[in-house]
Every structure is written in structure tokens, then in C-alpha cells.
Image (tube, rainbow, N blue to C red; front, side, top):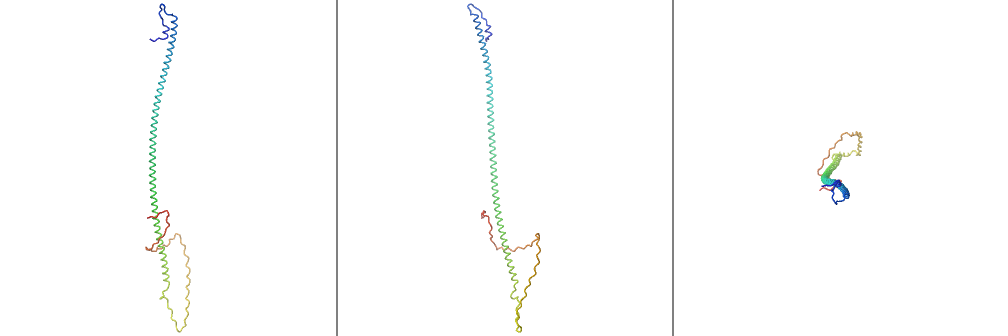
Length: 235
């Protein structure tokens, strides 16, 4: 049974012989009622404080749960970001390695191509030098043969111009009755009339082509050519 301060104040006791002092009992009941009221009020305050504390505790627990969930979410997102960054870095590294390897292969192919081109240029140079040497040798042989041919023609012409001994007229025998007549000087040949000046040659006029002299196969000439000091002799 719950007793309130009002119940204590309104409580009535039956009187008996030699009982308690009524005034003292009433005074004590007043004091007791006030104290009970104070205790009840304090208890009410404590109940309210407890409710507020419990509410705050529940709120703190909710915040803690939210923080834990946020931390877990943050950790999960961080792990995913790290994994994505690691995968992206691996992809970038693999792509960079592939491109570097491709560039190295292209550079090696280009180097081999340049080496082949250099070798081809060297071969063409050797072929050109050989052809030029052969051409120069042929021209030298042709020039030598032309010189010999001109010398032979001049010698033949000189022989033709000189009279043979049996073609000369015989001197007449001296007559015994007539004195010998001293030989008369032969008339000197008159100089030939000067040839008319040659007509000017037009630049676009065709020039006479002189047929090449026959080339002797047994004539060879060694013509030293200026060789490249950096080129090594071929075996």
C-alpha cells in the first residue's frame, strides 16, 4: 500500500486512555508528511535524471553504433580505394613496360634496318668504284689507242709523201760536146692561199661524232684511285 503525504496528514487515530499526546502526534505527522513529500519529490527528480541519463546513454549508443558503422564503411572504402589504386598502378606499370618493350623492339628493328642500309650503301659504293675504275681504264685504253693510231697515221703519211729511190728521175748523162750546165735551182712552192674563216658554230648545231677506235683486249692499265681511308678492303 502506497502512502502519500496527504494520507499522513489526514490520518486519524482513535483515542484511548493513557494514549499519546495528540498535539505531539499531529506535529510529528506534519514533519513526517513533509519529509515524505521531499523524498518523493527527490525520487521524482532522480527518476527524471535517470530517464534523461538513459536517453543520453541510448543516444550515445546510437552515436557509437553510427560511428562504428561509419568507421567500418570508411575502412571498407579505404580498402577499396587502395585496391583500385594498386590495380591501376599495376595496369599503368604493365602498360609502361609493354610500351617500353615495344619501343625497344622498334629501336632494335630500326638499328638492324640502318645497318642493312649502310651495308647496301657500302656495296653500292664498291660497285660504283669498280664500275668507275673499269670505265676509266676503258677510256684510258681508248685514248692510248687513239694516240697510237694518230702516230701511225702520221708515220704512214710521212712515208707516202717521201718519194722512193726508184721513182726519182735519173740525172742525164753529160754530153761531151756541150759543157755541163750547172743545175738550176728548182722553183720554191708558192704558199697556199689562206683558207676562208670557218663559219661560227651554233650551240644547238649537232657536232660530228668520231667513231671510237678499236679497243685491244690485251692492253690493261692499273689506275690507282683515291680510296676511302675509312673503308676497309674487301676480301
